[in-house]
Length: 148
Image (tube, rainbow, N blue to C red; front, side, top):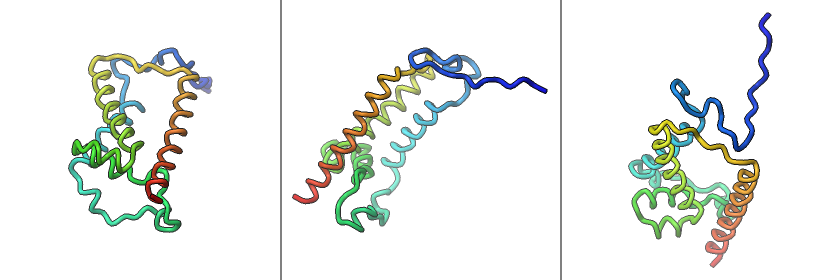
């Protein structure tokens, strides 16, 4: 019988032993970077705004959901139409820019062979709180814009 190995526990703020080096493989950061890059390519080259889709909440209740307009924001930003992207969804424009920047930065990090820095627990909690606040503010902005 083989002795069981305890799962590896990472302490926030310390580098992962598997964070860099030869043979590290394709991990979560690279997956998210690939999704970010793919979102740019789809927003830039696929006719996603031509698809006949209506937001279910808007269709049922007549009000936009918290993420309404994000597809339009991604598409407009991919075509360098910043004002139209922000008008469609301020959070969507910010999210698109952040996703594409992360894709580029992670590509540079991997090319340089640098480890991925792990944020502290405090930083993760702060980012979560800011993200929730931004989502609620974006939703309020969309509802007020819809009513006006």
